[in-house]
Image (tube, rainbow, N blue to C red; front, side):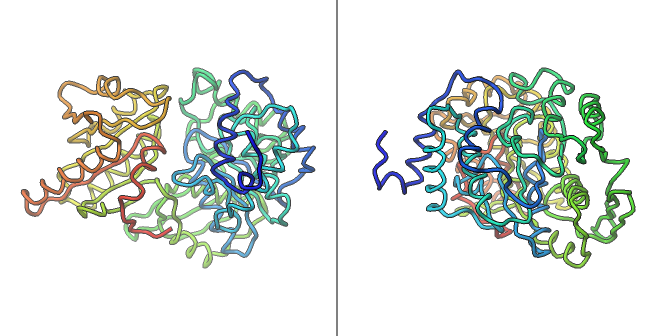
Length: 443
């Protein structure tokens, strides 16, 4: 592939290029990534680094820490994945997506530094992020693990604080068939003599054993830090810190899962951050992350829409809890339609089972990805009594448009009743409808 001057400054070229590398057989391990990082001169990415692994909740945890740190005046870099609409979302400096010209320069530098060393798509982009961060004098880098932890490219950095949000069944073909095996892989981000925050209500022995073997003090949800929701005034209290000696009351309930916000607060405390309660309250009121029970309206029909990137049963359970809470708040909601697409390697029946009690209609849709489960296979995972609407060769967006039109007709017919469209199953599902919704909360 030609590296002429035009291509080198075109982000779409670089993304197509690293996709075309299509590394199918590659030696597992971090040595290749470490070698390229050394060739680039990348040693540290910030004064302090927090690394986040876990089956679910990583993005919410990062978003909470980012807004708190920025509001306290720190310079922050964030690396997350995947993106919803633009690749630039993955790499942020002080809350802003990285500029395309900076990305392109970093892609070229990594390409020149790797020589004959093979890199996967994620390894390449991780090195791009680390190179960008290393050239800024950042106070904090918040690094989200892509898959697992032990062998993930992000793990070449020695994090000051490790975070494991939760461990559930997902990506079993890569990480192992049970929670203990998956926990072992995620515990690979724990570093010797450095603290780890673990947010699971049911901690795995593999994580606990890894922390003990490395003399890394582990801070457990419910034992060393916790939160309590106060429904009477829609606030929550938090307690935690290095010695469980920090107590903050009357915090506003954020738009993201409080469990993940609480984990992030504990990680910041261990990183030496002193919480300014006034700043913290302001931060939590503004906390926002696309695709996490994100309330919108359809731009054409005006019906209510929720976007949620849940893609495994544990995340679907959280989505179901949010739906239940929404129904308790708005008793006029009488009709819920789900527009759904899932990857073929997911526990589809388990995912559906979590949502079924709340769903009146299932709009089964496909999307353009070789890993996507065929529509007929997905529909076969539903029960005979489920109301299923098949796409008839329509795109995911067209299926979404039909769901909105059907709900609009229902609301006209049933005066006083409301409905809800839920788009879920994958980041790609949420991405497909991004341009068709109006957000209630601005990014």
